[in-house]
Image 1 (tube, rainbow, N blue to C red):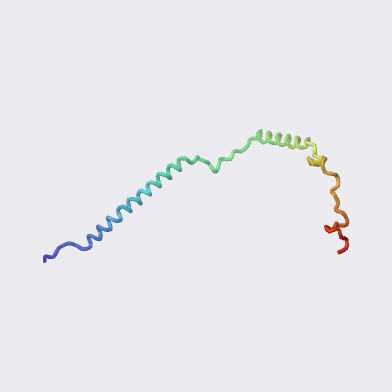
Image 2: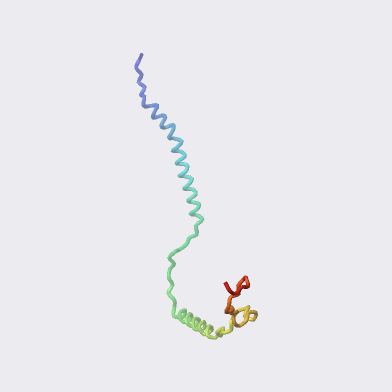
Length: 113
């Protein structure tokens, strides 16, 4: 028999490449798909400025707010205090709650036990 120059490790490498190539392809496919989904989700997000620029108020604006606050407080003072009860069943119920009788009644009618 003639010796062959065939390396026995070649089929193992070929087997590995045959088995790993589809797995690698599906992995890359999943990665590309997730990138596409993430980019479309990011495009739908509103552009929100979480730290808005602070505006300083002018003297006129401060004066107008002070006048509006004073008018609000004055209008609250004009509202009369509610002294009457707002109980809708007040006329139906009596003024005094019913008192329990001094001696409880027995169910059997016998006073002596």
